Image (cartoon, rainbow, N blue to C red; front, side):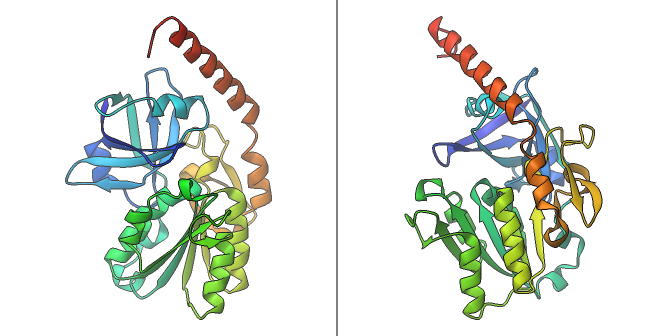
Length: 292
């Protein structure tokens, strides 16, 4: 069992958990993910690592409440225990395999969309710590959904907030902000885009337009997280890859985004049924006085 050390509501639908998991914290690297199971009979959920504290022996995950499993997990509180935290899984970010002195010579731009802001944080934190140039373009639908602004501002050179409705920062998409920066003279050696599939597709198109190599994370495709279910198959450079074991990060220029977007919706009907059943069971427990 893994004790919840801290629970923080980042927005109405996004929750941060810091969980005691010393062995996982000791081995975790930017770009990797965990498998979390809230209760013994719960679904196994793949979640990217938002942060890790080796001294404290804790890992931080960020969850958006969407379906039954995420609602169940987010119903837990500080002091409660999560049944399983397995990891770290997946390959770390490619720059983790390079000499820090070489990586430090580059300038990176991160395009973070919504919940994709969480896995951007440990990458930006590491790069900033070794002296690399780091800019972050953080996008959200509206101001209330902007997360980790303070944390990211401390681990990058420049943080640009973008909202669809203009309620905070730049009004428009992260791709439009990237174009504005490049056209104003900003030079980047590498772009990293993490967020909704459609956002990563157009972030790749925009980066390629300016000859900026781009890396994307296909973590949203993962279901089982071990390579056995096959749900996270993605075509990269004409070859079949699995996001959970071959990634989750890939060269964006080689990813078949259209195929990936079709695959990302194949379990939507099952998710809707599971969510409806969860709500029905929760309402029943509330009516008879359980779990208030």
